[in-house]
Image 1 (cartoon, helix red, strand yellow):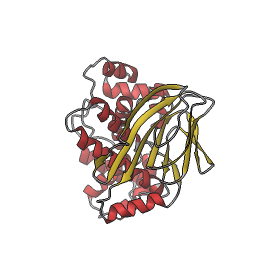
Image 2 (cartoon, one colour):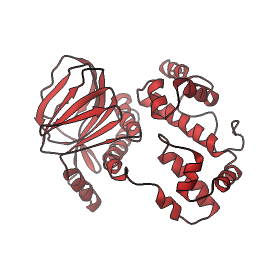
Image 3 (cartoon, rainbow, N blue to C red):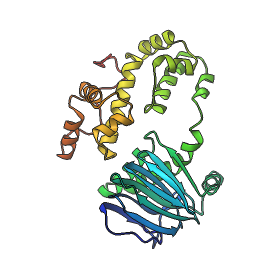
Image 4 (tube, rainbow, N blue to C red):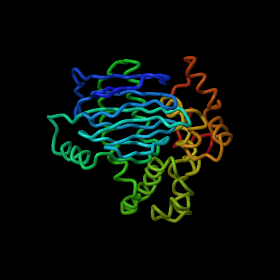
Length: 317
């Protein structure tokens, strides 16, 4: 990373960096100064420097430390660190494993609206924030970096969308962490809203979803009623829908997150890599390893699953 910092040059495995210090990239609510991904070995350091941009860092794998105004912050896989402007900041890889993280550095646009100014105030409240992500920010992060790498048509528009997502989600993460989905309970008690509440619940809790009984209780429905209604209205069971959505998310993580099958299995709370592989193969027709090999070889694996989870033709209902 630049930002006036001095990097210790040894120990990099790779560094995919895009910086715009001379002329920031104007992207709607923000001006982008840097975005990239760094993978380094034990002992790698980014020396202390004054933070001149707001920065969101996502730890993809490994462990390390961040120092903000002399305060040491431990970092582990899945952690999201938010740094505000005007504070001393440095990074250091741990001594036990490879440290890999993605980062984005930005400033708020001078032409922003009241909502953007309120968002900026939240960023300025503390020198730093940290929270454990459930995989929600990783996807737009890696998609955004992929847009810089591929330079596909309309990349600038996609980059703006992803950067704004990261900027907002980084603040919503720690703000929303203590909250529950109780707001869904107060929706109108129609059959459509009941089905939608399940779909929304699964999307929001895909990394740590528990039993269907627990879900029904939190949503304010009886387990029997919700299970019967969901199957009747969608053509599939809630459990099969959860299986499908987990595999759908795993495909995104394998394709864009740069993660191993074992890491994905852990993130999605599978009992073992074998359980994950079996579920993946049942839906995708290939194992996670075979899928990644097809993707690397330029095959037609894509990100689409072979059927819709809300279809009467779903073979796994």
